[in-house]
Amino acid sequence: MKLKTLLFISTLMLALFSLQGCSNGQLEIAQQIKAPKDKAVIFFFRTGRGGGAIKFHVHTLEGHPVGYLGKTGDSFSIEVDPGTKHYWSKAASRNDVILTVEAGKVYYVKATIKMGAVVGRPVLEQVSIENVPK
Image (cartoon, rainbow, N blue to C red; front, side, top):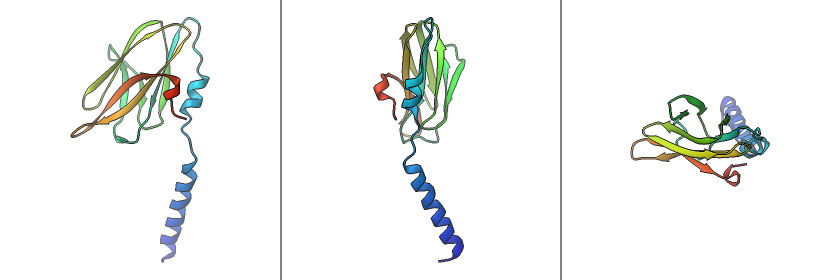
């Protein structure tokens, strides 16, 4: 084998092995979030293996972007007033999630990609903290 090819393969293998033990830390981040007494916190996170090329923003019902989930492992949180909250995302088609939130509590919204016949679409779903990946 040529030296360049051997070096390339060695570097690639080293990179793959070093990634094997990595964690995106979403659960650790989620566990550290504390809601103020007068506000609720919503933690959005992206999981899944398929649809990695599909990137999307999360918007309020009025269309204002609140965050971006570009790849698996991305997450963000927002503080909101108590009440009913409506968020949506869109790639090929739109998906909505509606939450009723209380002050002093943290809520979790999982974003995955559901593959369709031609293209995938984001799916937002309220979950418990037990469904936040490590």
